[in-house]
Each structure stands twice: as C-alpha cells, then as structure tokens.
Amino acid sequence: MKHRILALILSILLAALPMLACSDSNVNSDESANIETGANPGAETVDAEPDEPTAADTIKERYASTNLNGYVYKVLAIPTDGHFYSQVAAGINEVYAEEINGEIINDAIFNRNASAEALLNMTIEPIWGSNVDTIRTQVHNEVLAGTTEYDTVLNRMDFIGTNMYNGDLLNIKNIGTIDTDDYWWDRNIVDAFTLFGNKLYWLAGDLNIYDDFAAEVIFFNKKLCQDNNMEYPYGEVLAGTWTIDKFYQMAHTAEKDLNGDGKLMVGKDVVGHCEENDHVKHWIYAMGEKSLNIGEDGSLEVCLTNERQIRAIDTLYSYMVDRSMTYTGNSGAFKQDLILFLGTMLGPIGGLRDMESEFGVLPMPKLDEAQEHYGEYISNGWCTAYGIPMTNVHKADQIGIILDAICAFSHETLRYALYDVLFGAKFVRDPESVQMLDIIFESKAYDWAVDFSWGGGFQNCYNGIYDGKQNNFTSQTKSAMKMINKQLEKLMTTIKEMEY
Image (cartoon, rainbow, N blue to C red; front, top):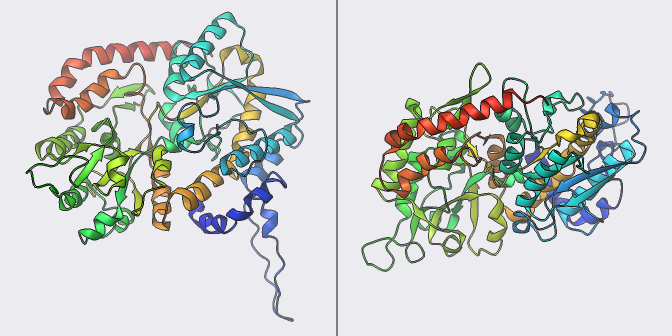
C-alpha cells in the first residue's frame, strides 16, 4: 500500500514535476528526505532508523562495476499511439521518450531510461513495429531466418504467447541476471505463467503500464448512489464484504423505467449494471476461479467442472439472465447518469475525464464473504509483456542486466507517475478510489486460457450462457472438453520440448 501514502505527497509536487524531471533522473531519491530538523538544545539524540534501500539504490549497487561500453540495446516495440496507448494520453508508448515535454508518463520514461543508460553505459533504441500483429509475425519470421536485430520484443501478451508457442523465445528462468522474485517484476505474471517450475517465456513489471490498464474493474456513478440513498461501496470493499449479492442489490435499487414503457433499455432508462463485452468471463476470476490451474507436476489442469466454479456460473446466470439485471453498454450512457455500475477495463478511464457527475472505481465483487481475496481479470490482449528472441541466447545475460535495470528504475519513476499522479490526481477523483486501485493491482488474475489462441473453447463456454440466454455451461463444457484437452496436451508437449 506504499503508493497510497505517496499519492498525497506527489499530488502536491505535481506542478513541479517538469522541473524535477530535468534534474537528476532518480527523481524520487531518498536524499531529499535527509533534511536536518531543529532539535531542542540538550535534548537526548535518538538515531533514526535507516531508510530501506529503494529499487534504484539496489540496482545501482548491483551493477556498480558493470560497464556495457556503449552497447546499443534495441527493442522491437509497439509504436507511439499504437495498441491502446492513445486512450491514456496522446504520444506515449512504454519504451522510449525522446525528450522531456511535461507529459507525466513521457517524462517518467525519459528519466528511467536516462538512469539505466548512465548506470550501465549503454543506450536504448526503439525499433517501431507497424502494429501488434505484424510484430508477432516479424519476430517469428526473423527468428526462423536467424536475423533478429533487436534484443527484446514488447507486444500484447497473447501475441507474445503465440511467439512462445512457435518456439521463438528464450526461457526467462534460464537467464541468471533476471531474478523474478525482485519486487519490480509482476509477481502475478511470474506465478501464473511459470510451468513445470522453471519455464517462463514472457515478463512484465514496473517497466510496463498496460499490465495495470488491462485490469477489469467496476466504475460506479456517485450521483445515482446519492439519488437512491445508497452508501458508496468503499466500506464494503475494505471490510472484505463486497459480494455479488450486494452488488446486484444496489443495481436493482438504481433501476428506473424513465419512459414508462414497461421495460428497461440502455440509453433511455436507468439500468443497474452494464458490461462492455465478455459478460461472464471476467466474473469467473473476480469470484476466485480460473479456467486452468497449475497442478503439482507444474502442468495445466482444467478447472471448468469444479463445484465452486459451477456455483459461480449458476449465480451469474441467475442475476444476468434469469433476472435480466445485466445489459450491454458503454461509457456514453454511464456519463449520462443512466448506468450505476459499468464493468470494463481500467484503460478507458481517460474517456471519463469530461464526465460531469462524480464517479468512483471499485474491484469486482466476490462470490461470497468466505472468499479470501478479490480477483481482477487481466486481459491478455491489452496487457503488454517482454520476450527475448531465442536468437539472442549468446547475449541473454547481458539483456537480462539491461531489463533488470530498466525495470528497477521504473519502480520510482514510471510506477509512481502511473499510480500516484496519473490516477491519484488526473483521472481518479477521490482518495477512496486510490485505495481501491491498490486492492485492484494487488488482486490481478492471469490465466493461460481464454484470450490466448488456444483458449477459444474456454471463452465460448463462459460467455455462451449470457449470449445464448441458456445455462448450458455443464453440457457445453462436456462437449468442448475433447478439443480443450487436445489443445492443452499439444501446448504442454510443445513447452516441455523447448530447449531454450
């Protein structure tokens, strides 16, 4: 929860960020905290506890004697304003900034890169791909030809998964200079995508922003809460009692047939709950379930027939279909005060900046209060991740050092800009929502199925109960299992046989 504490401080410093950005690249250095305070004469002096080393401190010590002699580190990357970047801010990417320009994300990336370049004596050079699809194809074709001219590739995670499946990438776990236990790496990705205990082919962390923007969340309309004398759900979330039953109680309370025609329509009446897409899939993860789990032998096991998952499906069908309490809608009707709860990814939050009514951000609710943690599905199609082409096996350790340094310096630059300033002062409008974002980012749920090319069968089973308006999940699962098991067997065999 460290970023909550920093939110207030950094919001005060917001106006000074451009000036700070032009100074030392480690803008959050603990040196600024070494201010001598006035002590009473003769008072007993108590030695202060030394501050814990920052990520920047740690990485500077780790590579104090490392010199890459001007090496040019090249990244094949999604171009500026490609992917979904423009939904956050114009002119940004996750890899490179040409100069300081006063835009928070841009300047954080510039400072991060400058720190890594100075420490290691190297330079960072982006190679912009045409788009996410051509990057995937380019990596595969160039690995086959043995002619890759870049050290790493940054792409959306499901496409990186395709490159892994095609044998294009190195195993991160074989690179001794990357310790995936370091806190600047996304622990949820490491845990979810490491198979057989030692095989991991992509990675994200504080050097990314879209592993956070890809989180499925609930936006709620505060005006509609006030109009219906409902308390904001923040207290329920913090108490661990924010459940699907309470969610739909509020949704039902807010419903209003404004035109009196006897039915509710999005955009004309007030509805309680809208999803932009994939109405059921996201909720499975919110309820602590998954399509696949990693078994004791390190391979994948199908979870579709788990008793608790079936109960989650039945609950969702009861509310969404039987009681007709879930609709398809987007931020347009939400901004018009016609939707109480809007389920979508965090990424489009920039589109709510011009909303007149106040809104808040919430984690998706649990199945029941007995569920230990909240769960926020991460879209593999929105989330970005890094992979290392297998043609670079001869310099994998050096690439690992560079990634390690960039990610560590991102912890006090890009991460702070993203969490504490961009969310805390620019998009999110209240401190309670910043608390909610802390919970959301700590509850990220990744899965080997659904969005990946081999996971279509899972997605159809989930979303089919809403799209087809029939609770045929068990029968659909049974009929799909043959294809699902065949795809998983091929996936597991492919990964087992990978030499790199």
